Image (cartoon, rainbow, N blue to C red):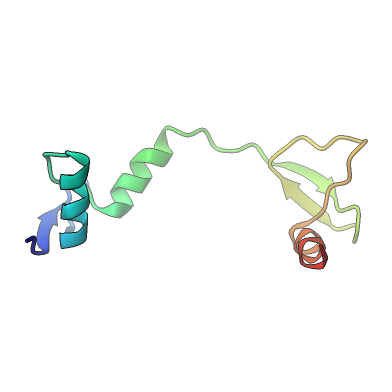
Length: 92
């Protein structure tokens, strides 16, 4: 049986809880070391190696508003702003 443990993050020094459920998961996966970083520092470390997405500006084919999209728009395909895209998904 496991009990929750309070650990100290080696990056930011904050306390975080290593829950009993997490400990069971670590054991099931065969991990022998406890986590050394809190969730925020783990996420920041993972995302630091990812390049920032280049955003492109396009006009929405439905409402004509400016939309920022993570892909290079092409003339042969319509681009929609977030609101119009969500409306189209609801209708489908």
